[in-house]
Amino acid sequence: MIYQYTITEEDLSIMDRIQKLEDENIETTNCLYELDNKINSIKTMYETLTEFERALARFGDKVALIAGLEISDKISPEEAYQQIKDLYKDLKRLRKVERKEWETGDLSNV
Image 1 (spheres, helix red, strand yellow):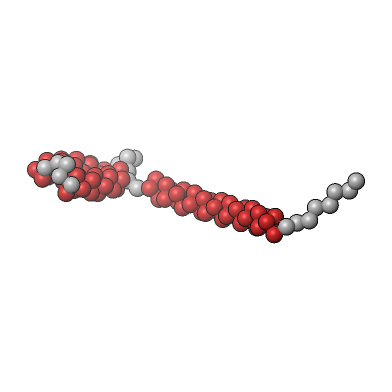
Image 2 (cartoon, rainbow, N blue to C red):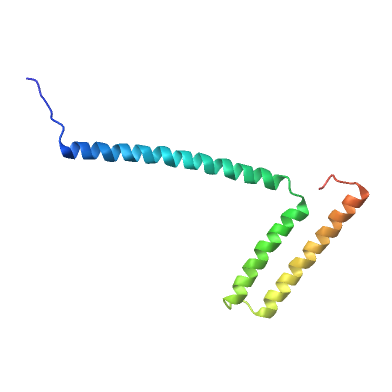
């Protein structure tokens, strides 16, 4: 007995959906690969920053967070001001250290 199967419209529809999912999977894989390359290039970019430059970037992020907390009334304006002032003092101290290293020619930490 030979069994013969005829492909129906429903089978074709299922096969089309499977093909679309496979194509989407390939596109997703390509997107993830491109995203991974971008992340690696960003990591490489930040590896070349000095300690002060990294601290400056963190300072900006923290100030934005503190401002958001103050705007949403989670902290008082005085507390926000004091926190930003303390962060700025730390940043200035780090900048002085880096400037001194540049002036003396000791670039081992930079």
